[in-house]
Length: 267
Image (cartoon, rainbow, N blue to C red; front, side):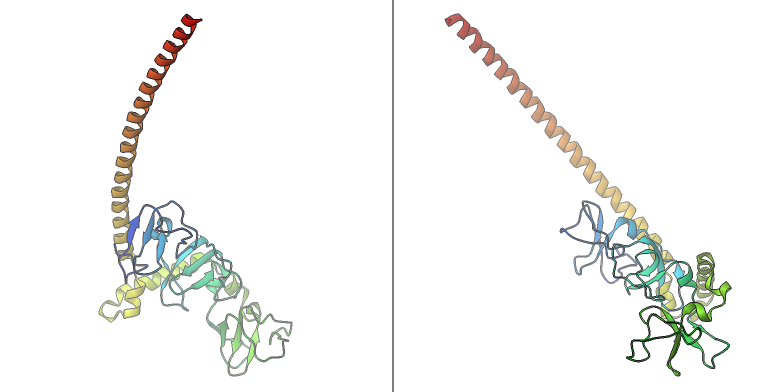
């Protein structure tokens, strides 16, 4: 089947992973004795749960729609906004390894106009303006961790804490608002008609997802039918084997009884 998460190759639905220690390409969880969508041409394995994920949220720093993950089994994934560990309640494009925390990080604007600086400030995941190992926020003048997200001005070589340049109402925008803006963006793409760009076409995968889901469900029905037949066959074999063992037990009991009677007669 063709799945929008891996359109370059055809995927095969397997009853279990073809090898041990395989992980789902999306959530990175180990796949053990479970159905998996497998690519025979490259190391792509997708568990059934992730196969039904629907990328639905657009972020202005990434060209693809993002899917929500409650948790992924990787502790070295960093948020593209704040640069902190991002392994739970996140939006993710696993093909590009783009990860961002749900909630406040999703709502952070890519650029801000701060009243006390002449140039727009750009959101960046980490920033070291020099090799001094001492970094400060240009606004509050407190120590700033260079490995965490910041707003910076490349021209002036300065950086600020994220919270120092954002109004409170901006930094507390809810995830629902972000998702709403994503829906509006998709509607805008649909209205563009012939003006739709190749990037927009790639981003809108609703039809492909529905088609893939339908195909997966059909193939799961086929595989489950095979499993039922295997179980039925095993039950028949076990029944025949059990009958054979019961007959052997009966013959052994008769032989034992005869031997005991003969032994008692001789004594």
